[in-house]
Length: 441
Image (tube, rainbow, N blue to C red; front, side, top):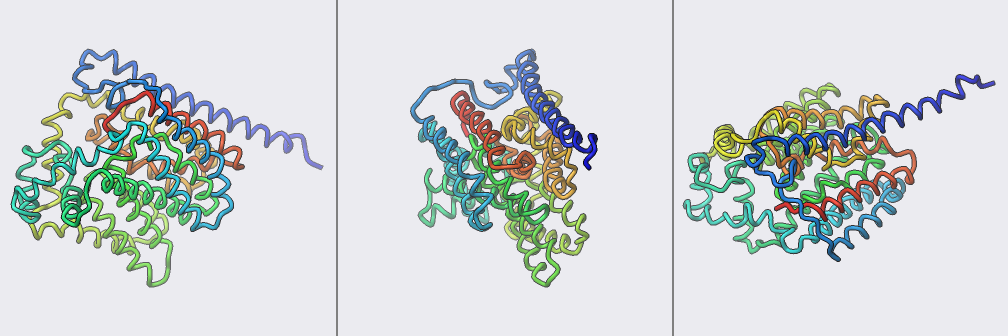
């Protein structure tokens, strides 16, 4: 016969779980409030270059019929995707996740009309003429570091990979907002799929299926038409390939590791910041005791990163020049101690309250496999924050780090109906954010 203590334990456990979630949601709201109040009360507030503290942009609420598609698409996805993720064959789940992630991103961007799709062209595409001005790709690479103080800010902050990609695609007849948006959506889809592939391989297919809707319906999708989602798609694809290699014991793990390392190395030629995503790769490889696989991946990545040396560009020199330009510009006036908190506040809103609740529930479950993925993603965010090279604009800059952390939403799901309540909250946050905040991304 079941004892009273045994009968009460599940109820006690559920109550403790609810308290953990309530505390997490309170902390989520508190960090946003503190970041806002602290930022507004600073005497150097104008120097922060933020008109929507702690976000980049300005608060300008609008009521337009263009908000209706996000509401409808969000509601449909809330209803359909949990069931799709639970019941469809795995490959179809990945396709559905990618398609819905793209659709959700596009309907949010369309609220701002043509301006919602202009960021990549404005910050990178319109500067491809610099390649020809310098005498072609080889000369552009050779002089890239030397002329860092003479190029626009986004080129100062990144390696030349995206500018050269847009230059080459333009010569092939692919250019303009449509092409640039296609690149961004490819990044969105690739990042979502890569995160789920990693979750399935390291944790379980059940965990990955439960996480799928939370990877899609994220408030961060408000900023999904900028270049950083392209960078994230490439980098996370490399991460996923290397992780898959660490889980194999046959000979195919070597080409898989080399391919993953090469793709990850390629992402480093687009942006410096994704180097931190080596943390989850190393965490999984060392946990699985696959150091040789890690060495193969690292060697392949190093070859790709070193390849532009043939034309005079060295990644380390580019990173050093970027640091100089950063601290000669906005980095000199944005205080480290404030943005140490504000960056995390912006990240918290971008991933949404469901992610905060999921992290609290995941902490109670103490699933070591899940923490290999989600915990290493959080470690990447904290390292980026402590580096001091992310003073504001983390809603854009940290896009590549978000999908791994979003997987925490899986811990909230015991049934599709459970998922729908949290997903509805995520959709609400995203729509309100899109309606209230005007940003260039």
